[in-house]
Length: 180
Length: 160
Image 1 (cartoon, chains in turn red, green):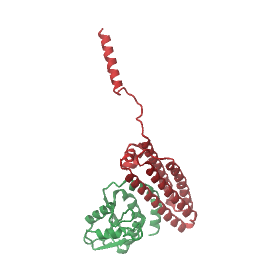
Image 2: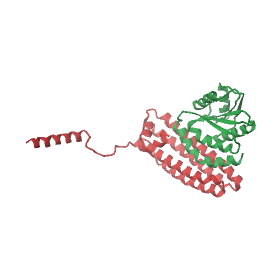
Image 3: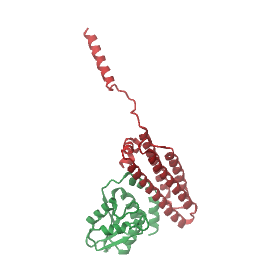
Image 4: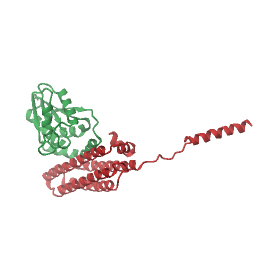
């Protein structure tokens, strides 16, 4: 009889734990659509800047070939970035449409500067040409960097309820960017 | 070298402004605590919009430190420009040391470019950086601008 009581008591404890959500359920917590949007943006930025850094490593030799190789890598990486960013769509927030427009404007600036880089590199010949092209590429990267700065300032300004800020905090892929 | 110590403050602004951006004000305040009466102080930075005051002019108006001379570089549009202008000024003055004043989040790029621009000069470079973390946008800008630094450093070193 005491064994039956003990088994019943154990079952009751197990049921109570399961009911309380302590039964070792390993289901992933649900990720909100806004967090997925933020995560997509951070993924795109991180991949792109990593690719830019790899392309920059090729440029220490200051030759036309190195410049063209680097520019080709930048071009491919930027195309991927633009596809990723334009595919993000609209975040599910109060100011979602404005946020989408802000990111679209960023993509437009990056695309225009990508074209400037292509033109500068196409025109380059000889060491003087390489030096001039690098200055032009630097100006374009600076413009892109400023566009990023402007974009995130704008996102902050339109995010009155802090929904996007929370999404950036929650998205794992934003950890490196948010905490750096 | 026996020339003065050069304290170079790299400017910062966002768009047209009639007042110093807080980031720039923090750099200037740090420079004021670093400077000594016999230093030359270089304030460097352009105006992002035509007709606006340059970062250099805004900093000069707000300067409260001590210095033997205040020099302005109104033409520097980028960190690369800040670094090239600083190196050129340091050489012209025969400076014995350059103190680079900027934000902590900007230090890696700024110091890499300044070191390259001063390569071979034998000048000592000291860093003085503010502790502000920088906005997410500002940090992203650094990530985007960083990849070209090795190439710009090579150009700066070649052009000295």
